[in-house]
Structure formats: structure tokens, C-alpha cells
Length: 168
Image (cartoon, rainbow, N blue to C red; front, side, top):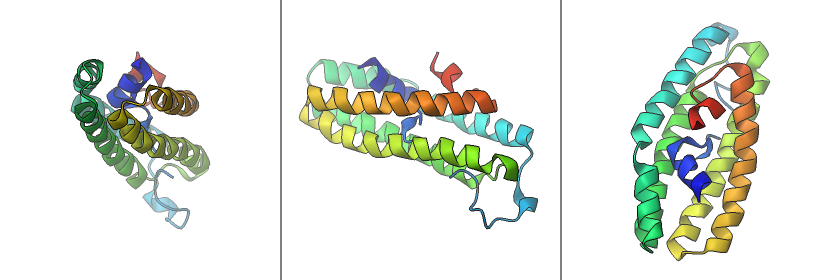
């Protein structure tokens, strides 16, 4: 259950992350390279988006744990859904950034993993509402696997507020 809380705190993304979930980044490959940010600017803006997300979801993990722990599954699912919405908004903001052309594939992979987390997190909302512990554990494990991969990409790229450092 702690990874579900960390998804709310910032999965991802990641996955969520949801970020779910979050999950390519930057415009399409049709974008002109003049719109591309430098790597340092991309990292700075991505870190700001993720930092803002962390502030936006502060306390949701505790709310979720409290509701779910007391058997208030519907309230817990609403809290998780709210977290997913916030994560998806942050993912949209990340997707609006245009990374350096040479980094587009890396960023696309990162955000694809976060999109996958987000899709699973939507399923997780339903499982939480039903109080289905088995399905919650299965979906949580899927999110965890995706989050580890997306965190590594973020860490390797230098996006510290979106990677594993943000989960510490």
C-alpha cells in the first residue's frame, strides 16, 4: 500500500503516475528544432513542474491511507482519482515542453512509461472503490515496475524532482 501512497505523492508518473501516469514529452517530431529547449532549460522547467505537483498532492497520501485503512473505499478512490488528475495535468505540462532534438527519444520513453502508469492508476481507482486488495496489489506491482523504469530515465537525464530522488 505504501507504493500506492507514493503514486499519489508523485508516481511517477510516476505514474503514475501515475503519474500514474506521468504518460511523448515535448511536441511531436514535426516541431521545429527552434522550439526546443536546451537540456538545462528542459530539466529546470521539468523540475519546476514536478516540484509544483509534489506541493499540489501533499497530504493526499495520508488522506488516502486514512480512508482506505478505515474501510472508506469510496473516499479513498476519490482521493486517488484527485491525485491522478493532478498527475495527469503535470504530465500534460511536461508534454508541452520541447526537449533538445537529440533527447526526444529518451523523453518520449520517459513519458510513455508515465502514460502507462496513469492508465493503470485509473484502473486502480476502481479497484480501491471496490476494496479489492488482490487487484490493488497486482496493479500496484505493475505501477511499481513502470515507476522504477521511469525514475531511472529521469535520474539519468537529471530531472531530480521527477525521478527517484523525489520519492525519498
